[in-house]
Length: 214
Image 1: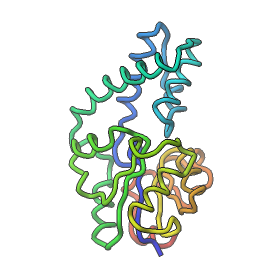
Image 2: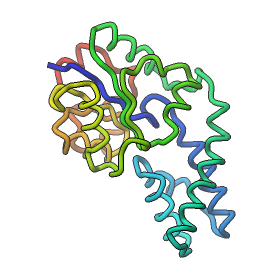
Image 3: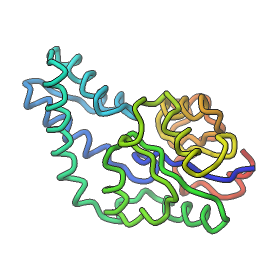
């Protein structure tokens, strides 16, 4: 029996990919090379540190660990500047409605995101009160496909992983949920979300009937 839903943030509740892309592109240009949208797609569900390492590899640039830390902070400062201007109309279609549906049915909700800025984003779009627990990049050390973020989400709700359904838009997240012993609903294209128990275009296509049939 489903007792909780654990949601990724980017691409599921809101779409901040454009802000990440602009900030990473600005950093790449700052370092003397370009960063494409195709490369940005490869960073879905990847931590900030690992994303920076990949971008540096693609740009053929080597930096010490200390320099990488400063660059990651610089990128994040640009990103935070942009997300501070986010508004409720940036919530993805059906996300708020499904969250309310789930909570009204007596199910618990948690966020399971790699983002260290998830609280800021949820506050800006007015959704933070709809989550019983928030587990993000500030609480975990391992990146997806490691299941740590979702396992901690289940633990924070006082539930077994098998009682939770994860909503994810990235293959790394789908793999993380499955590795954690949870059912998972993929958000996006089924061709890119192998292993998901169900794939929908967005939360606007979800309802309780589909949830309970997983």
